[in-house]
Image 1 (cartoon, rainbow, N blue to C red):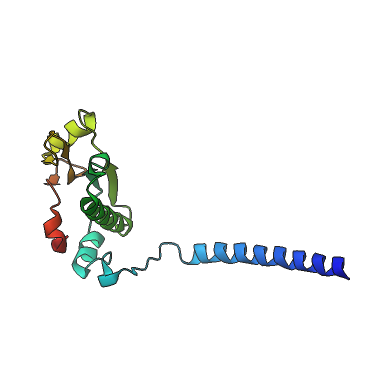
Image 2: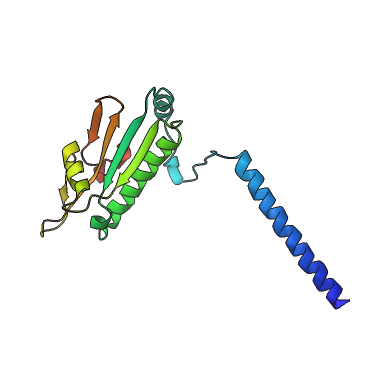
Length: 161
C-alpha cells in the first residue's frame, strides 16, 4: 500500500510538472509581446504622443546610448537614473515594430567607443578630482545622413524624460 501511494504521488507530481510546462508554453505563445507597466506612476508607459511618433516611423533609426557603467560604480543615484533611461529606450525600441535599433555602449577611457561618443558630440562629465569622466548621452542616426544627439541626460531633468 505504501509503495503504491509513493508511485501515485510521484506520478501525480510528474503530471503536474508536465501540465505546468505546457501551460507556460501556451501563455508564452498567446501573450508574446504583451507588456504591463506595474511601476508607481507608470514610469515606463509611453505617452500617446510617443506612441504616435513610433507608429509613424518610416525608416529604421539607430540609437546609441553611451553610458559609462564602470565609471559610475560609486554613483548610485546616477546609475538608477541611467537604468531608467535605458529601460525607457528599450520600451520605445520594443514598441517601434523593429524600426528602432538600440545599442548600449560603455565607453571606457581611451577606447574607440570613447572616441565615437566624442565624435557624435556627447559630453564627458567630470566625476572626480582625478580627471575621471563619464558619459550618459544618446546619439541617433537614420539610414541617410540624419543625426541627432542628446549630449548628456541630466538627472535633475528626469521629469522631462
